[in-house]
Length: 321
Image 1 (cartoon, rainbow, N blue to C red):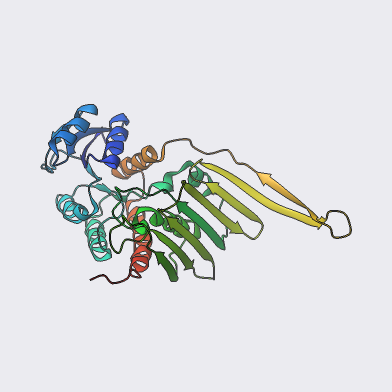
Image 2 (cartoon, helix red, strand yellow):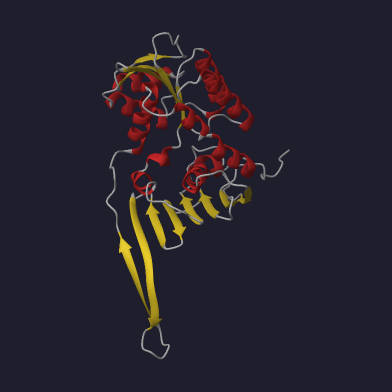
């Protein structure tokens, strides 16, 4: 494919990041920046050399669309874009309900169109490095905590938890067979019914388990993931983007009389396979899908498992009247 002509919907925080990444790509050109707010849309479009339009134009001369609009706008936008048989990258979640998400993906499947969801941590350099190393994980723990942000109106499940649910599913190699969760509601500024803390336990076929914690009422950012196998522990700091592997060898009494202990552990620090910014790597993968260099069917199939888990989690929200 020649340089891909991209339309971007949304000029907010994530939209601005997407605009930067698309404009910097040698494989794509930001043709249109779509946002109903003229002052905001024009400013972002001018900064990255695109044409501002208040609503989605005809897609006849567009090769793909990136949607970074509000979640409630995803469904009508996605169905319009797919109806014009145009490939799509949409920020998570795909839509504001599981039913609508399944409908969108069914439409993309029927057309066999390239379709991606912005599950960005898949492209974190630490995850890219670890994925080929994982063999037989039986226990995964993850913590994703952040300070409170007033601009985030959805609960923490869709904002943060979904990333580590997706990673757990990816690293385990299958969707969970059981999902249990506890939700906490604490911050006075949160929308009624929107959870601030989630503790989730996933069980996988064969008995493997994952414990995933998400909080948006922390006092610092935490992005930690641990993968346990029979003979090693793999620890990742997704914020610092580093990986450490531990192999326990022996443990003995420190003095021969049981006072304390000494432990021998081999520590490996693998070199990262990439240092590429995750958003740039994600867009490169999207262009690979457009070019037929990556498997579109497999990409589409990888999206629903995490969305189904989050749907089960938020089903535990209390009924509000």
